[in-house]
Length: 140
Image (tube, rainbow, N blue to C red; front, top):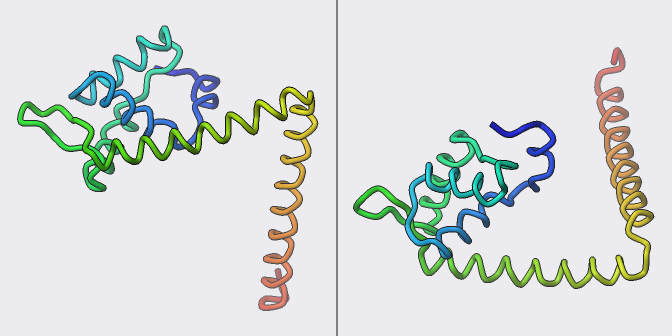
């Protein structure tokens, strides 16, 4: 089972593309095989839970990104390979931009500024909701 710290280091949405990548690289796999391989590749640092993997496989099946084989394994479809290719292009652009920022030595400052901008935007939005609610219900 993964620790809270490990869960926090796995970005939201990562699992979807990891499973597609794994199925493309390794071929057809069961959900348990996916969980075992993730644990093996991270030296035990991350083992996705059954509660993550099996619903994810269901969504990937429903969207046509994977298909089930006769022996109950899952394999990537051409549509899944295209999604993986598109993800790779986006990731390459993010890596390029982040590399530039890191070379400038501004990473920490930019991350803090971005976080503050997001917090300020959320607080402003929340304040507008509270003001609207108070206008509708003066007892709030």
